[in-house]
Every structure is written in structure tokens, then in C-alpha cells.
Length: 52
Ligand SMILES: [Zn+2]
Image (cartoon, rainbow, N blue to C red; front, side, top):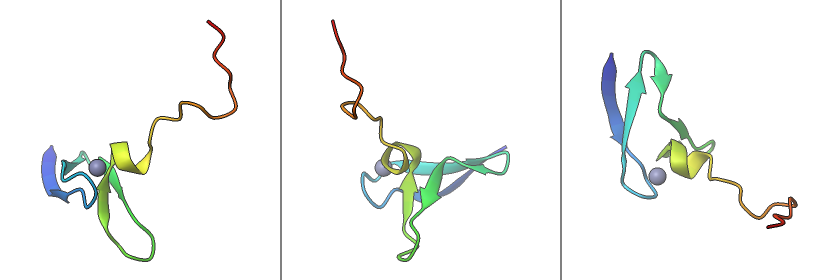
């Protein structure tokens, strides 16, 4: 089951609730709805040096 919850406050992407699991997050404090991409950004250069 997929239900449209709203749109990301940052990128405007549609955020769905799938089988009771929110495909995004609610920002604490402001209560803004954001998508999973904005909620959990891919960590690229964080400590781990990529040696080619
Ligand atoms: Zn987003």
C-alpha cells in the first residue's frame, strides 16, 4: 500500500508512506516533511579516504 504523504520541503520530491513506513522523515522542531534523500544524504567524503 502506498500513500502520498506530501512533498519534501527541500527538494519538492513526493514523499510516500509505504506499508506504514514513511519514505522520508519529519524534521524535529519545525515539523517539516523531507524525503529520504534529504533526510539521509549519502555520506561521501567523511573520514574514509578513497584510495583508487
Ligand atoms: Zn528532498
